[in-house]
Amino acid sequence: MKRPFAARVWREGDWYVSQCLDIDIASQGATEQEALRNLNEALELHFEPPQATRAPVVSAVEAGSA
Image (cartoon, rainbow, N blue to C red; front, side, top):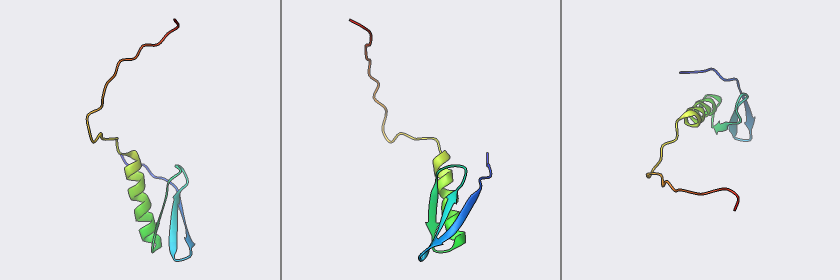
């Protein structure tokens, strides 16, 4: 499901910086359009479900007072 986010873009030296105003994510690019594309990619990666690169290790622990 796609959701719109507010973003702003400004120039810092030779780069354009894009920042999502709803979530603390930013990116950059050589042009405003590239900065926004890169921000879009960063947002998509942020919302991707995590995928383990190896099987998780399950351990048993005990807790309580002695």
